[in-house]
Image (tube, rainbow, N blue to C red; front, side):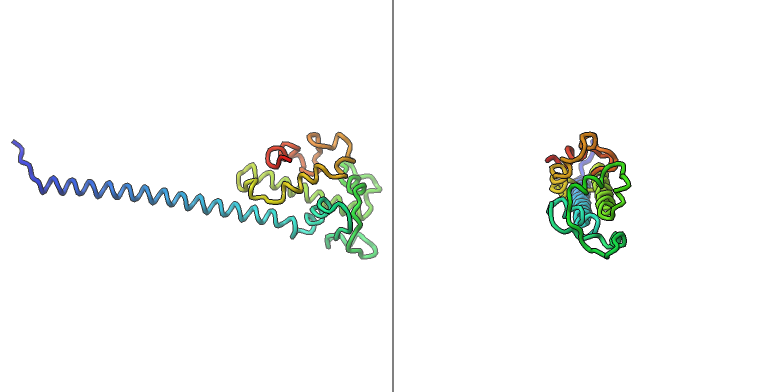
Length: 196
């Protein structure tokens, strides 16, 4: 008959219990570590999104477009790098929806070489690139729509603005050209990420 040794049995049981507790502790630590990693990743996404939104006021070209869309009237500050286009060293232009609509046409006519039209064109091309960058980051998941506070507002203003109503049907979303507001991302970008 096999002899029962209580001390061996208890030490084996205790060793198993300690091993199980160690495994549970390690699993708990891995789970906590995963949550901390997710939290850190979310924080990074929020910081990056904040920087993207901040560009609307810090970048002179984007600020020009944001003010043109938001205010709709009044003087607009010409971005410094485009002031050389003007003979009289102007620093503002009077906002004109008709000029804006003409400036963003896919084919700029010779009259489009007017300094004011060129400023609109350059700035709204930069705005289109900015929207394209945001669309790409949304698709990649590096930012979330909820983190881009304010961008949806400017898109809705853009779609409802006076200059947008002046555009030919062929230039309106969803048939928008690459030179228009979202540079080929078309209205799918707006409908998917920023429904009005």
